[in-house]
Amino acid sequence: MRRASPYVTVLSLLLLGYGWMDIAARRTEDGSEDWGYVEVRPKAHMFWWLYRSPNRIDDASEPWPVVLWLQGGPGASGVGIGNFEEIGPLDTNLKPRKSTWLQKADLLFVDNPVGTGCSFVEDPKLFVKTDEEAATDLCTLLIEIFNRNESLQKSPLHIVAESYGGKFAVTLALSVLKAIEAGKLKLKLGGVALGDSWISPEDFVFSWAPLLKDVSRLDDYGVKKCDSVTEKIRQQLRSGQYTEARDSCGELEELISSSSNSVDFYNFLLDSGMDPLSTGAGELTPGVSMKRYARHLSNLKASASDARDLDSLMNGAVKKKLQIIPANFTWVEESDPVSSSLQGDFMKPRIEEVDELLAKGVNVTIYNGQLDLICATKGTEAWVKKLKWEGLKTFLSMERTPLYCGTGTVTKGFKRSYQNLHFYWILGAGHFVPVDQPCVSLDMITAITQSPAST
Ligand SMILES: *[C@@H]1O[C@H](CO)[C@@H](O)[C@H](O)[C@H]1NC(C)=O
Ligand SMILES: *[C@@H]1O[C@H](CO)[C@@H](O)[C@H](O)[C@H]1NC(C)=O
Ligand SMILES: *[C@@H]1O[C@H](CO)[C@@H](O)[C@H](O)[C@H]1NC(C)=O
Image (cartoon, rainbow, N blue to C red):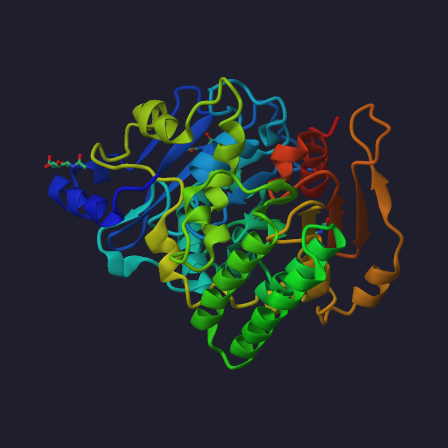
């Protein structure tokens, strides 16, 4: 499935004129939902959608939390994917989701960086090139949303990220703290949660072949072929050739696909979906698995008989409801130009940022699905061990607590906490943890946010 060129979108918006800008925000009559555009830089428009929980309890001693969900890609739409396919109140059939995180917290979805989902730029030069630029835009958005509402400011904001979103989350948390200190942003940062997050590309890349060998999906011969590419990536990263390393990363993914008979990068127990990109010989773009990120969930759903296509939902019923999406605008799951624009940052690690947050006393939660390959637990554990945080040694020496869910007696995962670092190992989940293990994910978000609606 090919998407319409985003440049067509930019051009058509220019043709439309900016008459719509005076209706840049809307809310439902009962006040349970707000959404709108914030012009985070001239001609760069970021879309956000806030849902207020029906379970909200206003008690000063137990503040009601807000979860900001940051999707990965980079360039995948949180307003579409995270909301309708993972944690929002409605699924893609617009039926209530039993496991929605809205039971425990207010939910703020954004299409980040600009150019993603419903967000757009009027000039392709305005796409962000670094995680930091994305964080600056997000911070501007938060200033617009939080500074004008004192009641909202009492709610701690928990930044919860998936995949590439983790890199945005840690850079955003640091710029949020800076903006708060400078008196520019009125907000309480509750913490950061990094779900299957691309914090250290090098550690993930090195985990792929050994992990697949251990679970019989590669043999020694396959591992040996991969070794020469991983070594090349190591050298490229050492010499700061990040764009080249991203290309090699694509090469490695391709090699793994062919040596494993198309393992699924989001769940190593599965075969990759019937994505034409994965079978097209010789002309694969680098980082192809990251690009397939948005499509994995749609592929899984395609087998379900009543599944509704996210594309037609977003460009149909949702667009009609929201009213402020430019008529001529087409929503896409994952934006190629947003992703390409970040190619220089794609392979850069953000471990130091995690260290900075830990040193500042911010709660950092890491959660990882057992069956994920692209951001495998093996790679996550490897970068955690590189932290300079003074509590690390104690953290690593502690026993884990087993997790169950509901009335179940089956082990669903493990948790370890020491001071402000928390790690959840979620069993039976791939890359998309809330989709694969909704029950234990809901318990986890309750604990992370210390939601007053905990029972
Ligand atoms: C401010 O936020 C509170 C809590 O989410 C909400 O109840 C209220 O309607 C908001 N006020 C405005 C003017 O948006
Ligand atoms: C957008 O609107 C313009 C002007 O009305 C029109 O010429 C163009 O065909 C539209 N483009 C799309 C993709 O619908
Ligand atoms: C961090 O989370 C714990 C609960 O896990 C909570 O007791 C503590 O107050 C939080 N600390 C900060 C600084 O938010």
